[in-house]
Image (cartoon, rainbow, N blue to C red):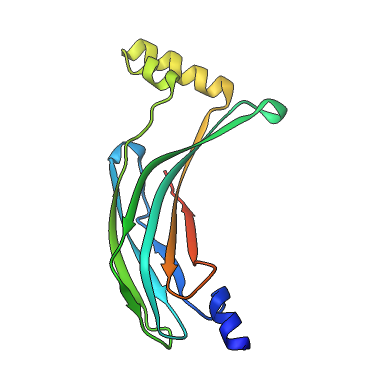
Length: 154
């Protein structure tokens, strides 16, 4: 009984770990990485969802506004058998994405003079973008799916 509850909750089930490159730039257009899957018991992964999210914040303290934008999504639908005893299985992926320029960035890209004004406006308003990748695996017979997320270094 306890074993079935632990399996359903994913306590001793599949563990998911994102392995990403050390450098990232939003203008790259795609990012390659690996997903490492391990488990104490044999399990079957039916799908893995990978998403790139931009967290765009501006303003300071009480007047801060934060928006999140999904820049790219990929779903790996291959059946993946994860063996027991922690033997790792790695899945390679390449996630294509489309950077979403803010209105200030679009204004700044018109010419070099506007670029300087846009840079100053962004510094004055405290504009910051943080990018992260999230991955979630669908495991057969498990109620709570394993996931991982990592903030990308720019």
